Amino acid sequence: MTAVDHPYPGPEETQLYGPPSGSLADLLERVLDKGIVIAGDIKIDLLDIELLTIRLRLFIASVDTAKKAGIDWWETDPALSSRAARDALAEENARLRARLDALEGSAGETAGAAR
Amino acid sequence: MSGLPAGPAAPALVCAFAVTRTPPDAAALAAATGHEEGGPLRVLRAGGLCLVVQDVPAALFDQEALAERLNRPGDLERCARAHHRGVEAAHGRGPVVPLPMATLYRGDRTAERAVTSREAVLDALLDRLRDRTEWAVKVHAAEHGPDAAAGSGSGAGADTGGRAYLSRASARRRDREDAHGRALAEAEAVDAELRRYAVAAVRHRPQSERLTGRRAPQLLNVAYLVDDAERVRFTRALARIAADGRHPAVEVGVSGPWIPYSFARWDEDPDRTGQGRTDPDRTEQDRTDPDRTGQGARS
Image (tube, rainbow over all chains, first blue to last red; front, side, top):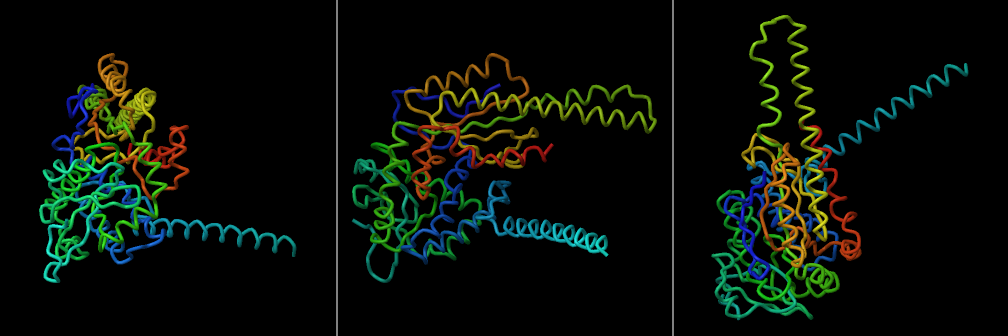
């Protein structure tokens, strides 16, 4: 089944259509999405540091709002979400600990066996 | 050309909407409204390119004010729609590179420099987006599929034994998993079919049920960049997918044509943009593919 939100305009139509009503999510996904661009701005030469900082912060603020609306596509992107960054760090930490335990364990075994 | 007084009484910021090569028609620009709180839309020349901008009051668009306003859903929507209007107004003649919402500069000079310092990237993007539009396609699992199948066995089940219960439960789970697997495979098939008519595709993260208001999960949320010359074939392919009944486990919805926001990453590596033309399958969607792993966990 196919639902078309907007009647297809013929090829002769040059006018672009705005979002069909009710697709605010589609619009937000587009105008905010790859707000990653904003994160990108930060490493590139900053002409306007102050305002780019503003952009970054306001993106995060609007992310909270979008999140309330159930839009959560950035959550696993460490560049955009401090939470995701924390999760990634915690995960890596756990992985390293496990690795360390394993190494220590096998080192102990080797030491024991050598004795 | 600024509609705002230059005096210190009303400090303004420059809000940028889009980059173009050809300035939009002056009358069309004058007829369009960007942010209601700001001045008229105007064109800023930046090297060989144009930037469509608007002066907006700093009191409403500085950090605190914006953060507060954008956290109110009504204002967020107004702001997003205003931004989209500004981008559309810029689109009048020739391709545009739409900028993210609330791209703000302290003045014309910094806005110009932001563009001129990236002129090569922007030029490449404008070439890539010319005569192309974006189509948003969402594939959902069909609402009737798995639940109907699961419900059928439970009616006359007089057997109340624990083992029977467990076996019924696991059969239900298997049904659900099978149905989900079928739906995913069909979603991939739909995507593969549509890609034949697209220059490039980007997978967005599937939207949550809370956002879509549907019970069935969204399996795919893809943006396709389609040549104007291919548009009819693309939309026909969509109609065919709907009509031929080969994909009963999914429902396909589409919106468009959009100004190609999803393909206008102006701070992206220019090499990447070039790649998109020759090898669409290896560009954007590869980067977003991890999204699909999230799908599996959802069950």
